Length: 347
Image 1 (cartoon, one colour):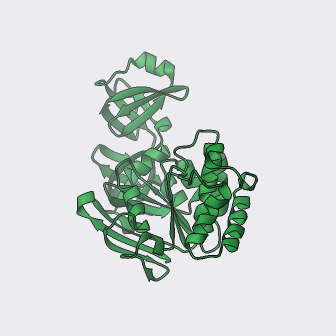
Image 2 (cartoon, rainbow, N blue to C red; image 1 turned 90 degrees about the horizontal axis):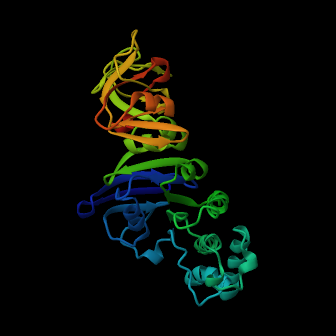
Image 3 (cartoon, helix red, strand yellow; image 1 turned 90 degrees about the vertical axis):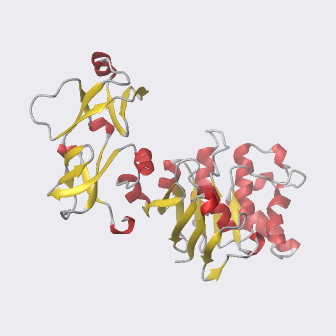
C-alpha cells in the first residue's frame, strides 16, 4: 500500500483509518460535515491532526505542506491573477527547485495534456470556469506529486463544464505512479474516476471497497442513498431470511448466508408497492409504515416512510391520497430483495 492514513482529532470528531494502493484513485464520499475535507487537509499538511500519514514508506506527519510531495486541488482554481496561464503552471515546478526552462517545459507539457495549451498567454480573468480548473489541474500535476488530493474539483463549475473537466481527470489521474484521493458528492464521479470508494460518516469510515461493490451492494445509509436503494440491516435466521427491526425479510442471495450473520436486505423504491389496506394473499415482504413525505420523482411520485422509499405512479398516488402521517403497507417481492452479508471488515 503506498498510502496509509490514521488520523484522530476528538475536537473535530475525526477518527479514521484507511489505505490506498499505489496508482489508484479512491473516492471519498459522505454527507456534509462528515469530515471529508478535514481528512484531506490533514493529509496535505494544512491542518495538524494527531496520527500518521505514510506515503510510499515516507512519514509525512510533522512535515510542512510544501515538503510532502502532495498536491491539493479544491473547488476554486485559485490561480495567480497577475501571472499568465503558462507562468501559473510553471510556478509549481519552480517551487520544487527546477530551472526556469525545465519548469516552462513541464508547464507546456501539462497544458497540452489537459487541452488548454492555446491559452498559455492569457491571464486567469480571460478564462472560463472550466478552462481555469483545467489550468489548476495542470499546475498541480506539473509539481510531479506522488499524491494528488481533489476536494470537490467540479463543484463550482457550471453544468456544461463538468463533463469536459471530468474527462480530463479521467485521463490525467491514470498518470503512472500517481495516487489520488477524490472528495465528491457525485456518484458519477466515483463511477467514472475511482477504483475504490471510502464512505465517511460522522468522522469515521462507515464503508470501503471497490467502487462497483459499494454502489451496487451498499453497506452504509449514505451509500444506499447514492445508489437509490432501500437498505435494511438484520440478522440471518435461516436460509434467505433476515430478522430486522421492521419485521422478517425474505430475499435472494448470490451466496450462502450463515445463520447468525449480520446482513443487509436491499431493494429499489420501484420494487415497492403501496396499499392502504392489508393486501390480499400472502406477500413475502410486508411492512406497515407511516408516510413521512410525498414528493415528485421523475414521471411519478416518491413516497417516504422514514428511511424507506417507494416509487409509484401519479395515478396511484392520487388514488391513495397519501399525506404525511398516513398509515400504509409497503410490499416488495422476495425475488426483488437482494440479501448480502455485512462483511467481516465492517464488523
